[in-house]
Image (cartoon, rainbow, N blue to C red; front, side, top):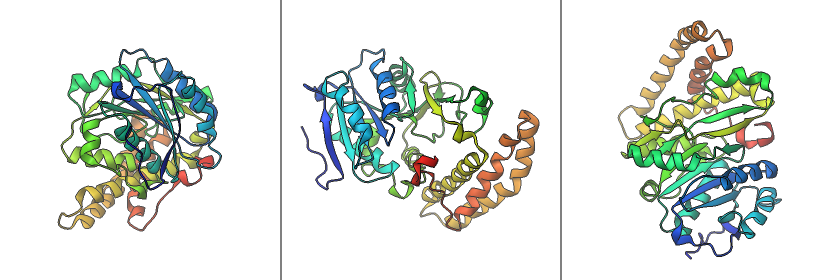
Length: 332
């Protein structure tokens, strides 16, 4: 077994007995932070996967002191009910956790073809893994995204499902020009090898957007992107996330991320910074009109204001604004 990085950033808390690492065809990475009950629900959905593929799970605990998620998950692995590893990602932050899990997958499982990502507030449909892997193979895609179907804690909030913060970017299976989120994702081993660690840029650690940046850079490298509409996970949405200030903060954050990702994409080209700024200003100028069109189409003021907030976030990013929603996870 190849050892983990020697810098102390990652350690193994436990593993399933008699783990046949060389036989693993797919690896599911599952980051967790202070959600012991929810991570158990996610793991239960992974145990229920209907597939003939041999897969392993890597749980990445990102709270290195109390380790509530790791403590909850470890018995399942140690009893052999789930095949894989529980690791500790000692450096706090969203990107650090993903990097730890993805690098561990490469080091520990030499023959896997597909790496999948699911979050600890999500439940996978029984056919999720099979459908995501199948879509990658059928579409000839190196990276495949899938929908995160919102399950609102309060059924009265179901009307928010069509808000851009929650709605999927695509509705049909097929190749796509861009992907934005790792909340439901498949990445080919070939992509990870080519991109190399650190996969996600740590400057996005507490803001989010490291996944969007990684996906943008991967597309620039020529990797094929796809979408699997049938590969669903269900995301628990607490009442907090439909409050006006949370929606506004997430929308502004999306704008900030858009600017930062685009600047990295244009890096090295003439007048890159000026071009990004001009685009942001143009989007801000157009946003009231785009909002009115959305209002006419949906009748929802909350959906209508979204392009205004995103465009404003893009401009604010030019002045150093960064909405680090993950810095205080209890408020996220």
